[in-house]
Length: 450
Ligand code: GAP
Image (tube, rainbow, N blue to C red; front, side, top):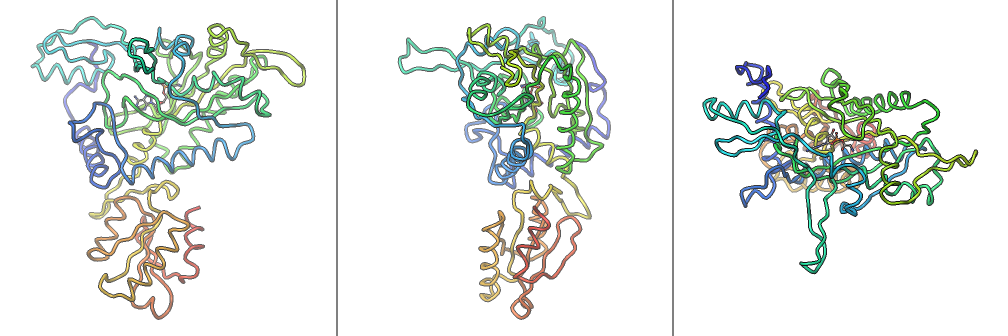
């Protein structure tokens, strides 16, 4: 097996990073962000369930992405294609033939690993005191098979989609015929993909069921502008992650070498995140050329060309793709936002992404007048913001509880509020407190959050 530096002696930094991941996994379970899939039955490898706070975070990420790449642009439309596609799609796309990872098996216990995942294979060798023999790497196809049809003997074998991309390309003509798009333009999609990953791991980072958010951006190959668009989308995507507050020093580009590029890619760059388990792929930007449309033309026998409305010229466009993982975004945003300050754990999530925007507390839970006014404010704020209510324990404990899940603002109703119709608003990151008039509270929060 190839050796790499990451298999060496564990150093302090590695231990700290393991510790950080453990804290994040524990926080996710304890506070309802992410649970192991099918946990009461012993789990199902590589699957995760998002709890009440996790689903809010993930929805916020997807909503923000959709707003920024579809709603606010004039050159983009959206689509939501089926997860189950005609199996010919996957022959045409090259996935049946080439969507493979190299698999090796331990001859001692028959555990299987990805040959290129050195850390896992080295850890496995250690568990056998170094006495491991490996099989030769074999190609293992990642497509997940399913069976469709009501008569058992006539059921047809299909694949759950291995990337959301193909549902877009097979609809290229439908979109052209039903909208007024003109090249250059993009089709965006968000949805689930499935891969029979050999070694799922690093929490949700490599799962067998996950969500992607992708743009397929169609350009004219003759304009020789592919490099320009490739660079444009690299910058757009990097800027998007920065706009969500991810620390600049934790993001970088990494160009793929020719031998590691996917079968469809003429060029590829990853945006990587500096995660506790090392620099890791966050999003891919790929120059797919006319791979998809030409293959679908060939395999379906349908004309997939674009007709220029001004010149009448017909051609197969090239595609620049941006493909990000929603689960990776949720994970890396949590990692990036996690901080411990003076004994407090704070998730410094961007206001737009925080599951709850505001929490409302009555200073004391046994004072009906305080509770009544606080409830009224809470019900009113709920119309505009996802809001939390907490009347347990003391105020300090409630602040700590909201800090830990990233709620940017806490509103406390105290005795003074009954007199002056003002409340205390406390900011998560600075812990600073401000008195705000109840009538101005909504606009105050809109000003900070929107
Ligand atoms: N359509 C191109 C495509 O699917 P990819 O590099 O295989 O390209 C794109 O995947 C993104 O999807 C990755 O950068 C990652 O964010 C996410 N992704 C891929 N495999 C994943 C997995 N097993 N678990 C979670 N996210 C994954």
